Image 1: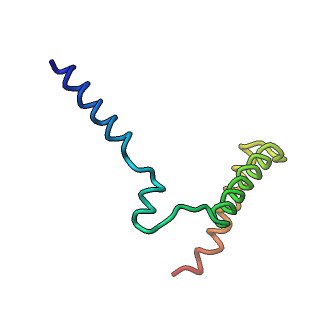
Image 2 (image 1 turned 135 degrees about the horizontal axis):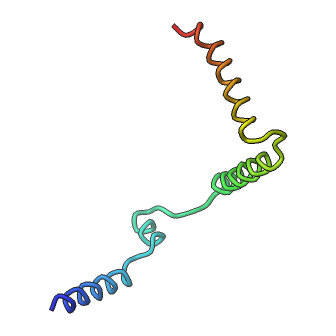
Image 3 (image 1 turned 45 degrees about the vertical axis):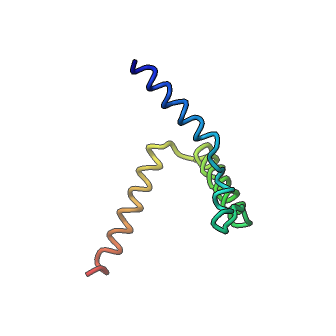
Length: 88
């Protein structure tokens, strides 16, 4: 008995979803529109560049990961030591 009720509910939801407006239609109803301007395209290219640059940096790094982390940690510590006296 429960299986029939669940199936009926699923069919009702499917019918409702089939008649639901798309996101673009819903935006048009309220006087807006969906667009991808230059900013979105530029952000996409920037993100792709960051990902590509990061990947190349990992492949072409002159030191191992452990050595790089050790050096970065040392530089960060020196920066903290330099800034700490200036911060009250």
